[in-house]
Amino acid sequence: MPDYSPFDGMRSAPARLELVEVAWPMRAPSGRILECGVYQTDFGYEARMGYGENLLASQYAQDIENARAYALRFHGDASQNPRFVDIPLQGKP
Image (tube, rainbow, N blue to C red; front, side):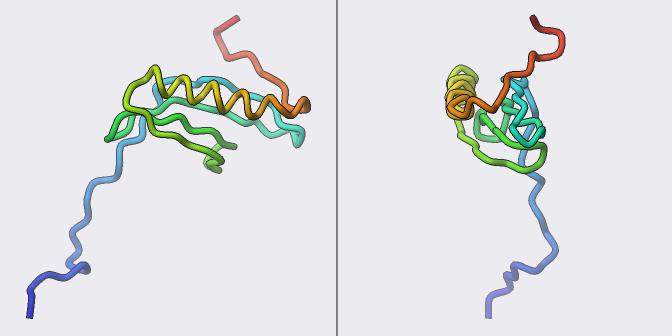
């Protein structure tokens, strides 16, 4: 019988997910803030869009430029609904 058990108590470290930049925020028709950010992960970068912890869409990218391009694509998708309103980023014009 093998001496391996998936229940031996060993766990790997949590995956890396560090915010690099907020790409854009928008106010949804419900009044909630829809936000997209670019994150550094263990495997590269990721554009993530959602309401706080409620993730709606994400896309991995090998470099930050492609992650930013995905964030712009998510913005274009959300902008299709004219009831979503852009919110200026804090500290930016």
